[in-house]
Length: 331
Image (cartoon, rainbow, N blue to C red):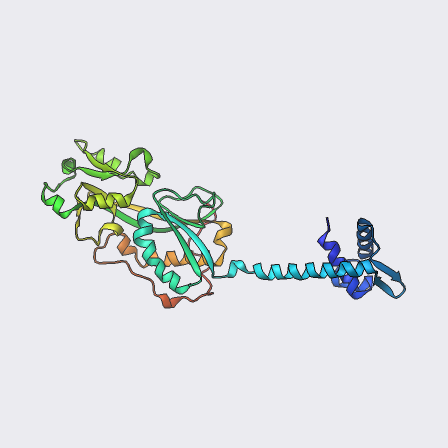
């Protein structure tokens, strides 16, 4: 197998015709150049140079090899040019894994501002009712409901959000709306399938039910928070929903505030090598900025709707903020 360094030494000697000049350009000792050329000729079983007091002249075989070697050199240079600075390009695809409700009701509408800023970037959004596995390269970025425990990830708290109990207006008018926590058992509930909950952070009904004198009945359980939302809206029962999904819906009425007042956090994470890509850095910082201006909405302020970031603030190729935003290389 040809050694690329041997070819580089061969080309410099062929071009300069002197060992000393080739050695100077290669920044190595001229005796090393001589030794490498002899070894290279021996490995090929072919004489490449005619040696004389005037220097090194290529043989016919050497001329033939020079043509091939220069072609390889040009192709290698072209390959390097085509892939260099890929980390600095604001183009290509970014796969973002996110929880189902947050991805559908918050991240999707916010991303319109990001794609306006960076039209050459394609966001592949995975809003899933489970944890996206970054270690298995399912995504470049992930937004999770609990802090990842992988020491190889770059991790940062993205935002807090609030959840509370909701019921559909007509459904509540037909029943006695509970005025105290003890009366919650009079309503059928909507919730997760217990043994399929993908994070302990979603087990928010358990401590509430544990306080009740009577255990309530469930009319529907689902692994999907969006399915739970539609079940609650259709009057099947009451259930706990993130305020960012329910607070703007006039058909949904919050119940038992402030007795049921739950705060959780979202975390953003990426593998270190993916976090170093400029397009990923830009989306990371965009998401942190976008949710920051919507903190009141995420915490359930009914006077606040989701606000889109100004699209004029960024431009393709602009540099993201340096790591000073609480990002941590270890979990």
